[in-house]
Image 1 (cartoon, rainbow, N blue to C red):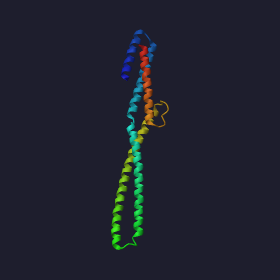
Image 2 (cartoon, helix red, strand yellow):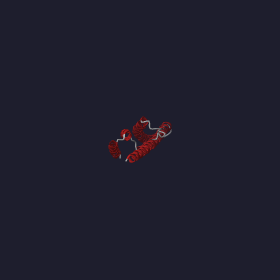
Image 3 (cartoon, rainbow, N blue to C red):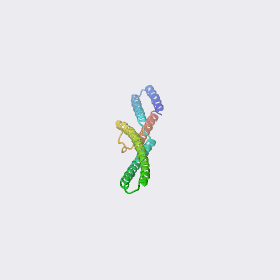
Image 4 (cartoon, rainbow, N blue to C red):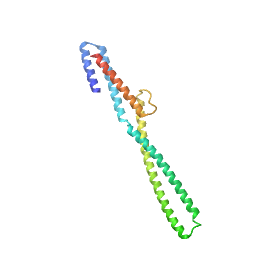
Length: 183
């Protein structure tokens, strides 16, 4: 679409030169520079673009992170309770009961520790991924803010990108209208 506009502007420039219009030549040069600026902005935004799917993934990761934290806390509490029970109950039981009970509790404690370690590992991975996605989001917002195109929609990447696209569409319509009016 941008190439077509540039070709239209070039054709209009050649018509303006033949008809001797200096004002329209300046307008065409201004339109060309505006198009170049917008193309550069679009390319920069495309490099730092974050999609809805990535935002949904960040949200999902945050929810899973909370869930894993809760599970880890639950396992820690169960482990502490089992350790307290094993420390208190050892003196009142018989030898055979103690050995069997201690083995069962040792297995349960080992299983809980293993589950806790797995949850902590997953949580670390999700935190790293979430931080990486958050830095990508901040990069996009910084890129958008660097162009001084107006207010960023409350830090919401999707709304900001949609707003930029709407502005771009309106500028394209204006360019097309100017090109049509020059014909």
